[in-house]
Image 1: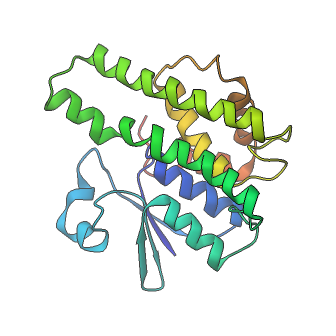
Image 2: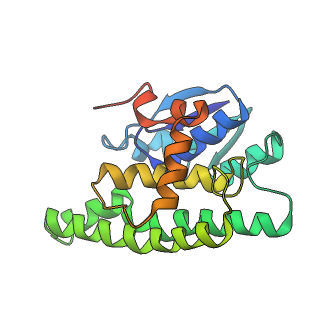
Length: 213
């Protein structure tokens, strides 16, 4: 099994966490998106999405982090990251999509670059854009955690799920971009707990072979 990944990609980070939680070994293939390696024809031939991550598993190529994690759950079901119980599954997906569909896309690196290079926004305006969508998105996430998450160490109970795989990279990026996360204590509590767990520690950007300070 191979994962094409960039150390600072939050979508790659999600998949690395999932692989670690399932104890699955993999070969790490670095794709430097800052150097536009994800746009090179050879890579696009493998992954028409022209982004990271990409999973290659015995001749099966799959892009998109949520699809990859769902595939891992289907092929290596223990521990499950997307619950089988219909209502808990829906709650996990609700929070995961709040991060992956509402927060991440508007703050993706290519979006931020477009704002600066094509629309001419200033660095200060770009930072304000980022902080606005982080605050709006995490406000919803925090409400979901408080209302439905319970009192366990993870988003939903005492075992990690897809929701934790999505939340941790998003919080990491927000902190790296100096966003004020004080209004989101439950999200921060879960984040701090996860960082102490081996699967999350080993998936962190600084632990990757292509890490750049």
